[in-house]
Length: 228
Image 1 (tube, rainbow, N blue to C red):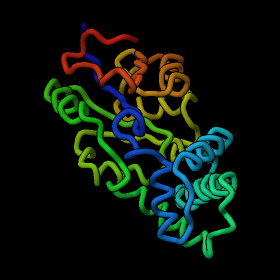
Image 2 (image 1 turned 45 degrees about the vertical axis):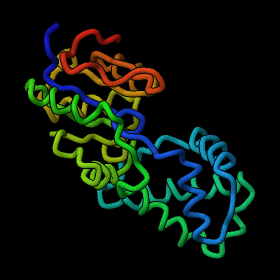
Image 3 (image 1 turned 120 degrees about the horizontal axis):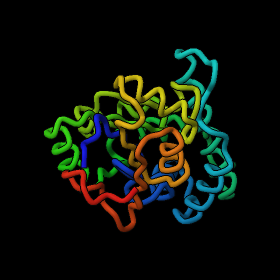
Image 4 (image 1 turned 90 degrees about the vertical axis):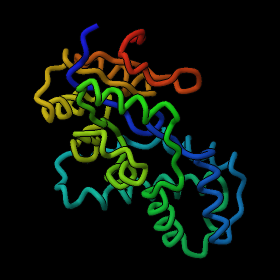
């Protein structure tokens, strides 16, 4: 099998995931602000709110405005999460809580790098394959990758908020390819979302690989035996 020129990887759910669950992280920090709620309740409320939200992409917005838009997007998700959990009005200062929560997810603390990641990225780099991140994450991705000691592996990072479109929009993949002066046929994309990663990348002409984290690891460093 011919090696690709570049392999793009999704971030959350592919390279790293939340320690425990979103509900556990939200709940732990909420307790520091005097609000007690079960993690399972928060998990359900979060995913309902997240699925109902519009894509995190801001077309025709200047780069300087993006961090503020990202913050507001996540503020709405968090507020809806605690509203659905029935405890939003228990916060004496929800804005202060959310600011702390938002900053927390910019650190390494709430994240877990999957055990197959470092060795696989190292061996791909040794084989001369360029690596990039293509994600619907926000601008905190730069700080998170650095905190998790993953940034050194990637020569490009492409995120929806900077492109102005979110996966599965082909514009995201086209932007990533331009950074490597690469045609779609020379690139792979690996991610855990069937719609955003697999279908999106395939429609954009890349070799698409769907990574189901419950039972499958990142493809072997030999780049062989991968289902796509």
